[in-house]
Length: 185
Figure 1 (cartoon, rainbow, N blue to C red):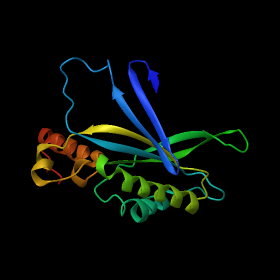
Figure 2 (cartoon, rainbow, N blue to C red):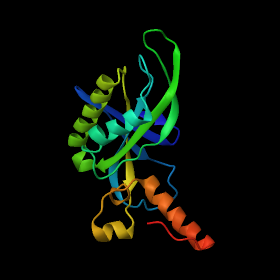
Figure 3 (cartoon, rainbow, N blue to C red):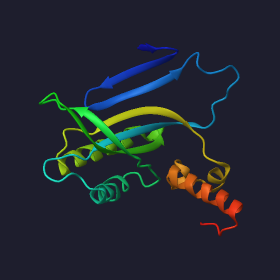
């Protein structure tokens, strides 16, 4: 067990299974604050795009997500883009590259099957795009669906839609009320 300031982190590993991380808030939570929602697992996968020959294109990555990730997690995921860096284990040099992150939320009670599918995704990307590795982080999150999602039985994130997509539609609706322009759906 490691103590990180006022947060306690427990790290457990098992043979042939990825590291699982459980975080427990200790003194950081103000008195009287009730966390909303259910506990879900949040996995982030960090995909590099540099490879021998031409780099992985946005189109190739989108196809990979559509063909490999979405069938395993059809209820929703989020894919923000970024710039990353890592140390090459063979040469010791720092490599900087465009990167993609896939964020997936899933129920704790389905974590074993979800973890297996995530490992399949990692290995498929490494093999398809000649990558040394795909970084994986796991944590737990309190997930609270909106009342509309609960009423219709939807599942996070955003009842089967990406959180970013839901937020951008909300912003368009708010802006259309201010400007008088037609709302998008």
